[in-house]
Structures are given as structure tokens and as C-alpha cells.
Length: 345
Image (cartoon, rainbow, N blue to C red; front, side, top):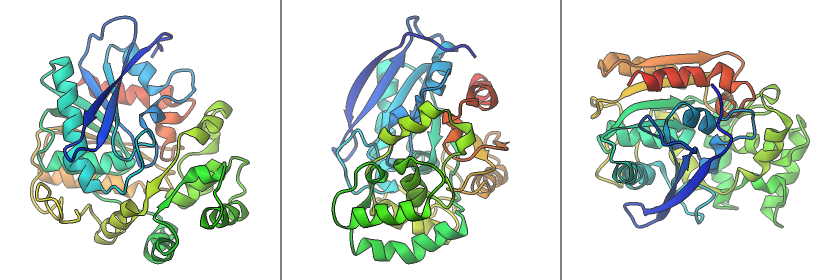
């Protein structure tokens, strides 16, 4: 589990299928990789850098130290790209397939493995079960996959508060916790800071308001070192309400559903057998207050019923949502599981 101290990185731009600019960050150690490419896919309103927390050994460090060729995808939800009103369908059809093709073209590898998180996970799962990323042989999904299950307060926010917020803004931004513009953002900031008193990090508080139903929602404070808690201030930004509106419909349905606007995708992603031979591994923090552990449990049961290649579920007591990757002890508690599963292929 040793980490590498000197890393080199190269940003490789590509165009998504609809022409939107995106990129891949290729991270390497001093030695050439001895194992195949692993694509890391971030969630909503963050960026590929979210996997590189300031801890003794983050996931990128550990993968490279173990010989893997690491690629961080910045898809249309990335704060490193121009803000846009995206939905999951666009990412599934236009972003992830092109990112995978770019990795294959650059490396010459026939197959790729992927570690996918949150809305990077939902949209990548959509692409996979629709048969759009056949080159991906192993998919490790964290937090949520095909069956989003949220806490009751989150369900209330999606059903009742989202239409009200839509009248006043077309996006949210946890960075308002650092500097909120005048008007509605400043009112939101005041309300958030009145309710969330669990720490003195404004972005941490806004993240919980935006994405979950906890104090905090996406991590356990005891799992983060102080450097990571402070670093998070720069790792969250713009997220459009178009995404939340689609997620509201998915939560109501109890499974992922498409908008119906792109013919490459089925309306219901569980209505027919998955069009993939990938092996799926599901990770669930048992204290997740963004997507409940039942999210991954239901998708795991679904794949077992489909008799697709062996599907495995890991539950992690004491972990929440993002601290599965950001936690100061994740290199001891979580990453060995990831390495074991990647090594099976």
C-alpha cells in the first residue's frame, strides 16, 4: 500500500459526442505502469481531482504504486469545465463512451477498468447497461448505481423545495459558503449557516444542504484530517438544477430512468438485461446520508438476479459517501478491497 512521491500528469482534451469540451488527466509515476488503465469518474459539481485528497496515500497514489495506469475523467459535471445545464443522459451517451475510447486509443489496451462515484456512477452505469462502453471489463461503483434511495429529508427537498428554488435560480453552488453573490445565493448562505453548525467550514455546510440530509451529509468529520477538510473548500462548485430534476424522477421511480430524449438509452434501465459483460463491484458506506446503503444493495440484488458476471457488494461501517475515498484511513480500510477487485482481472 505504499504511495509514490513524484507524479507526472498530462491533461488530454477530447470532445464529447455532442461537441462539449472535456478532458482526461493522465497521472503517472516515474516508472512505467505494469498493469492496465483504470478510469476514475467523479460525481456532480466536483472534478477529477476529488480522488487526490491531501492524505498520506490517496487513491491515485495507491493505484500508481501498485502499477496501474491512472486516468481521471473530467466529464460535463466537472468544475474544471465551463458550467452547463447537464443531465445524466448526456453524460452516459456523449461523455463516458468518448472518454473510454480516448483511453483505449492512447494506451492500446483492449479493456479498461473503472472506479465510478455518485453521479459519475449513475451516468456511467447507464452507459454500461446500454452497451455504450463495451471496453470496460470491471466497474467499481461507490454510493449509488441503478437504484437511488435517499433519506426522507432529501426526498422532501427534491419533491417540494426544488420547484421553489427553480423559480429563483437555475443552479446551486456549495462555494457560496466561501463567497456568496448578492441576492438569492446570499439568502441561501444565511439559511444554511443558521441550520448547519457542525463545523466552521462554509463549503462543508453548503455541500450537506445541496446533496444530502446530514450534519455533514457526504462524510464523517472524524474520517477527515484537517488538511482535507480545508482542501474541500476548493473542490465543489456549480451544479445545475437540471440534474436534480432528473434525479427527482429517478427517486420517484425507485430506479434510474432516462429523460427519453436520446434514443441510445432505454427509458427504464432495469426493464431488460444489461448489455454488458463487465463485472460489477458495489461499495456502500453504511453512514451515507446522501444515498442510503439500500441504493447499492438493491442494484447488487438486481445484478445477481440477472446472472451477469459475478457481482459483489462491500459495506463499510463508519464511512459515509465521499470519505470512502477521502478518509485519512481509507488506504487501510477501503483501498485494499479496491486493489483486490481490480487484481481479479
